[in-house]
Structure formats: structure tokens, C-alpha cells
Image (cartoon, rainbow, N blue to C red):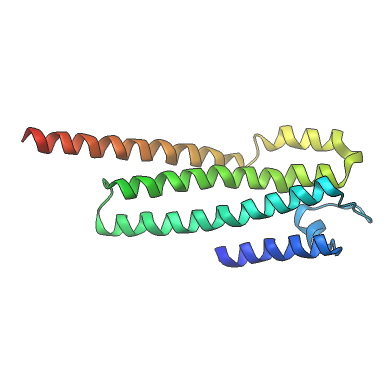
Length: 160
């Protein structure tokens, strides 16, 4: 599923850069009849799409690694904590990606609606996607707790 989302994002970016804006306007929900993909919008599209693909790959890989450790009961290993922190970072990056697709690209493609997009940005900060940001922060905190648990476990072994 992650691969399909990444391929769809790449396909959307490539077709938009080639001049066919139909997939992009559907994806970011622009209702303009003649969307303008200027240089700034093209750069933002390439950066946001690349970041989206890398974020989905990182999230998928981190989840698989953490679940492999959890299946073996090895949650106090450094690699499990690293996988958990990478999941948190990827969730935060996913929030940034969605912010780029939902606010930045429409603002750059339709510059006439900057006031409307700035209101959308303020609403976006408390939108459901902010839950992904919160989950990412919690995952980073859990990874820190796992690292501290590992250090305490090592100290207890030395004492005994």
C-alpha cells in the first residue's frame, strides 16, 4: 500500500510537470479551470513529492523493524528504540508533507486566494492531520523512555 501511494504521488507530480494538471488538481482539490504551475509551484511540487515518498518509505521500514523487535520481545534494544524514534520522525514529516499538499501548493498555484489559504492554514494547525504530529511527538518520547529503560536495565545488571 505504501508503494502504491508513493507511485501515485510520483505519477501525479510527473504528469503535472509535463503539463497535465488533472491529477494534481484532483489531489489538492483546486477548483480552478486554468491552474498556473509557476516555477515556485514546480519546485514546491518536486520537493513535497520527494519528501512524501521518502517519508512513506521511512515510515514503512520503521514500522516493520519495530514490529520485528516487538514480536521477539526485544523492546529494550537500541535498534527498537531507534526504529520507534524513526517512526516518530516520519509521522512529523508526514504532517509537513500534508501541510505542503493541502496549503502550500494551492497557495502557489492559485495566488489570488492567498487570504483564503491563510485561513485554511490556521484551521489546518488544529485539523485531524495535527493528530499525526502529536503521534510523532509521542513516539519520540516513547523512544526516549525505551532508551532510559535500557540504561536502567544495564545498571541493574551491573549492580547484581
